[in-house]
Image (tube, rainbow, N blue to C red; front, side):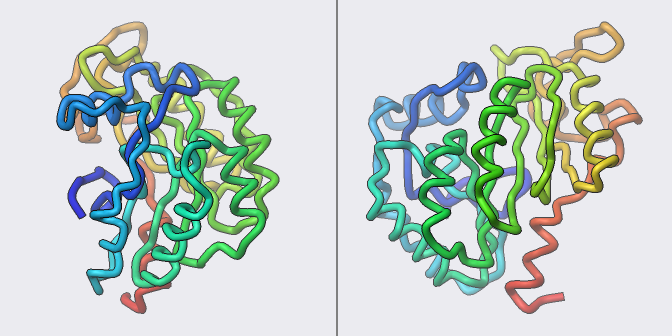
Length: 252
């Protein structure tokens, strides 16, 4: 149960490994982390059985991000492993799980055939207009009340149809090779969410945010601290997914 994520309590990595599917993957943090820390080729998938049952070993209510070091719906993840992972999440009903994927097609194919436990949120990730349009078009076919959208790294303007989306999470690209994050693009998403009444949450504004034609350089900590942001981006929004912890844990 190691690993922190700024918007979750911890990260659960039953699947490690992935491969690039679009331009948003260019500077993938997970790939760099896995290859540097283990020497493994990131494109070779690993079912991490050492942590597979970790959610069942705690009785505390947490919000957990699933597979930050891979994609649960990668085509190389066997169906029986997917079923086992979802069964663990079903049994750990005191935890809210966030499952995000760039492979909306396989996610919809798998999830449409079964009942998804109430403590799971399913999201799709995109970085620009093309990936958002393509993945949301597939994602719309999933009839499910707890769907979210991750726009990270946000690389340009996006026209959104937020039908059925209950949460939007926004972030720029972090790291020394990060591409610029134009804050006007974040603001456009925020305004769109406000108009459609969809809660949003800004994780960070990237390592190289661009505002009013000026490019800034921020550390990861500075980028995630809203005190460093232009006032037009404050407040950073809310995570309704975290609020749903109370629903499943019985806390208040």
